[in-house]
Amino acid sequence: MVEALVATAVAVGSAGIVYVMAAARVVKQYERGVVFRLGKLRGSVRGPGFTLILPFADRLHKVNMQIVTMPVPAQDGITRDNVTVRVDAVIYFKVVDPADAVIQVEDYRFAVSQMAQTSLRSIIGKSDLDDLLSNREKLNQGLELMIDSPAMGWGVQIDRVEIKDVSLPETMKRSMARQAEADRERRARVINADAELQASKKLAEAAGVMSQQPAALQLRLLQTVVAVAAEKNSTLVLPFPVELLRFLERAAPLPTTAEAPTAKAPAPEAPGAQAHSELGMEGPPEEPPSIP
Picture 1: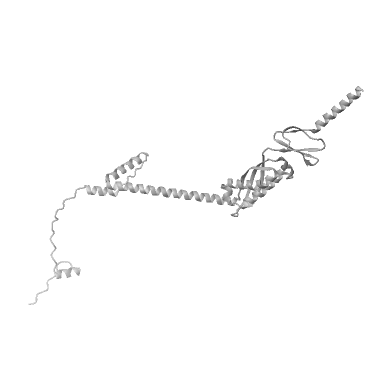
Picture 2: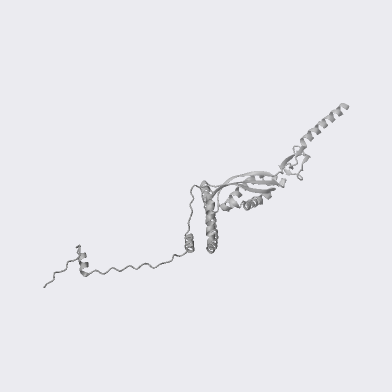
């Protein structure tokens, strides 16, 4: 009798141990457990720690509650200003309702990935190239709203969406490089012109001051000579301004003018002598013989 009771107790204990081993489940801290009993959702979501289920009747689905980082494959599209681009992104999301994530959608990861790809193509077609390159924060917010609206019904919350890279055709890259170079050249010319304008104004003011004091021009000339001589040049070119000549001319005394001696006027030649010289004959003309 005692042996039968001992055997029964051992059998019951063994069965209990097997049952506990079959029913015991451990849910990690970052997980939540969803229990289905005969295909029907059973009770509330199981929290982290040790939990028991009915063997062969309950099925426990563990759902990860961590933030998932999912890269969105690069999508080819045409922007609103007819530029072909290739854009890829990254999406951050997490499950906020484990029951809906298991019941409402077959595979919430795949669903979020497909929704992100279609939304990315849609946002490319609605944007300009300049927005994709410089105004990404606004596009990220719009992309997040487009994905988050359907994802809320799946028990998933979109935490953040980031456009990672925008690939442009080589022809567009060369065109943008030429545009940037032309813009920098334009700004350089404007700066040079502004500098020339300011320098001309200062030179005009300096010329006005020097015109009132002629000696200032000479001092400036001497300063230039000293600056050039400090370079240890073998040849020194000294400019000689015209104003210095005028200054010396005004400073020099005027010479006294004397009356020049008057020269006697030559006596007029006789008409015969003039004609004789015109004929090329030497000597005085002969007198005509007298007729008695």
